[in-house]
Image (cartoon, rainbow, N blue to C red; front, side, top):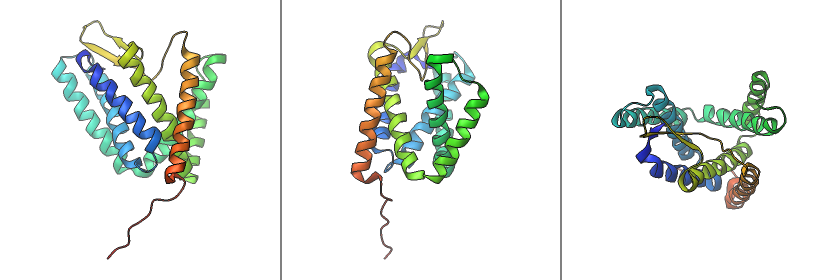
Length: 205
């Protein structure tokens, strides 16, 4: 949760960070880890202080964001494993919901473990696919929060809003269609821009 006055800049951050991850996630993976670590840390930090005053909430967001960014950037390989685990668990959750609601926790744990193992085994392509799909969804959440007010919910204090990484409503089907379309474009752009090749190392003089 963040102050209501921060809705527009936070939505812009989600849009920009999502676009960077979707279309340049492999080449900018460390930067993507930092941005997503900051966003995740900020959300966790603000949720711990609850609907406190504006400055307390901002301080918690800054502190949590800094810790999250440093943790993911420092733990590069851990970040890769988390990306694979998150991608697998998110996919299971999205596929499962239309049929039986939320999947069993054991199913999510197994899917996350398989995703983490696959990410370490096929690191390059998992980064491309994971950042493309994750970035596209972040873009949609940011766009919804910015233009339609979806993905957010005001709290009784009136100056606090909560960001949810999901969308609801009758247009959910089209949101998924747009997500898959943008994600595939992101995968294509990353592959065409050299994402399928290992980054070149400059020779030491």
